[in-house]
Image (tube, rainbow, N blue to C red; front, top):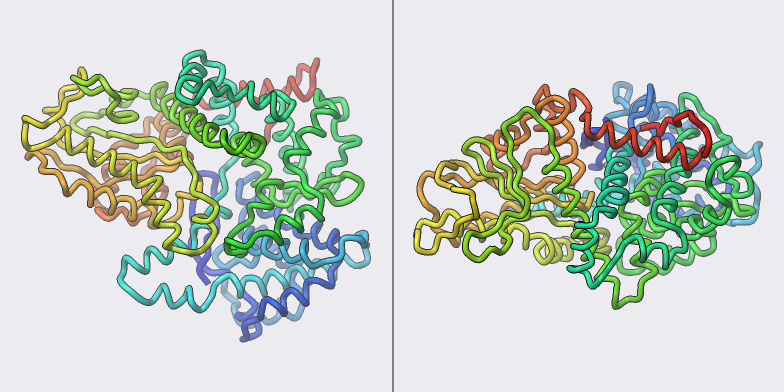
Amino acid sequence: MRVSATGRHRGIVISGVIFSYFDVFDRQPTKAELIAFVEKLPLRHAAFVISRINLALRYAMQDHGPANFGKVQEMLIAGHIDDEILGLLKARFPTERCDKRPVFLPQNLLSVFRIVVTHCDPLPAPKEQEDESVRYAIGRACLMMNSLLFTQDEGRALKLGTEDDRRVALMTQTIAGFELTNSPKADHLMPRLQVMYRILLRDPGVKSRIAVECEGFDFEREFNDLISIPLERWLFVIFAIYAYFLQGANPVDPHPEYMLINPENFCGKSGITRAELDIVLATIAIPTEQLKSSVENETSTDPRHDFVAFRSRPLLTVEQGKVLPVDLAFVLEKCHTGVQWTLHDKLAIKRRQTVFNAWGVLFEEYVHWLLEGMRTALPITYIRAPKWKHSKGESFDGILLQGDVLVPAEYKGGFLSRGARYSGNSRLLLTELNGKFATGCDQLADKIGSLFAEDDTVRKELEELPLDHFRSVLPVLVLQDHIFRVPFLNWYLNKQFQERLRHYRLRLGVFIRPLTVVNIQDLESMVHSAEGGNFDFIYALHHRTVRDEHVLSDLMDTLRQFPQFGKNPSPRIKKVLEDVQEDWSSYLFPGSEESTDLGI
């Protein structure tokens, strides 16, 4: 079975297979059989076990301390796979490595969690004497679920049709799993949080631009009015919750006392008030009966892929107001895109598009901040929103220049809809890709075609930027939605770009390279490496398109081939992290002179 697993913080993607029930017992379980097996478990105890496993996995995936993905899999197998299954696995697969062929991944855990919430009895309290049997039952359930994550029809789709058809089928089948296993990392989200919400939103120019372009929208004002807490304090409380659970996540040094948050004593001597905590929990926690209702009302998407009910409210209220994390990565995500979605859910329907538009402007300003403020010895120049020479209108969102290489770029802060993300339907996925994001491909192709037209009577020019000496054009599309790190997405959007570019006759002497699609986390990694070790990311991107004209290769695999990539931290980002750590510590522990480690 093809799935995705993740490695180090730079976003390493490892494709492989997972152990399934079929591998052990030579038969395919049914969903009804799995439900009948799981429904006998007490809900609260099963939820505790799944949450513990998820914490260990997410800790390893964030690459904290000595824990690593393979070692954690070994520990989880030892604690959750019974002797019968373990003996069969060792006999049949004596040389398999746990990091290459895991049992536990977020997708199967959340899928089993869905069954637990909808079918198990919520009343019995966890009993210590039943812990081993519940752990082994959850381990067996995960193996059974692994056999149900991939259907025969999906297998046939990977064998039939043209090569392009098979690539689209694989992209559709893996896009949701890649989003889960390659979740955003804390060492990226925290600086992004600081810059977007605490620097840019306080910049008068950025605030004014958002207000002008988005019907007077003001993020901080709207958030405070709708949620009844300042945006900054909401973010700090959520990160405090994340940091709390993280303390109990390391399976090498377990601290089960951090498995639950009790609102009665969580605030302690910190700067968090009980009123603030209650407001935050009202936006990210959900009682089991409400979660059950949300899950049961999902009808238009594939339950193997759609975990929006868990992602929207990643804390489960289990007893006496206490909460546990359903998925630690979902808690962390609240510090970034959670701001937009929290506003979205509170706004009147007719105003929801406004928050999307405002988010797009803020995202574009963030990319400008990254590139415009880049401090490196490399001869790279960034031009923000260059203008056409005669019309004075904006051409590209931004341009990078290095030698005879021109890098025109467009930035898209939008999201795929729930149906396109999680239906498992390639038609829905491609329709939305073409409608929302291929427009960026068309914009790049049209503008490049106009700049380098063979006919000089129709050729456009950029203000204060002669183009005669450029020999190579490297178009880049920067996307915000983390789900777009899936394989073949770059290949597909480049096909749309090339198809559009064919409409233009270009002057001789200029070579238009294939489109490069860059997710925001990967752009951050490139800029950080350029600042920390003078990593020449323009050369690296150009190198990839020369050697891989269909851009089928994984971008991060290419970047890691260069020794300067990821070698040293960016001084600018290090300063941002130090600032947020200082602010976070002073908020949590007012009056203390000690700084608290964020754990990132």
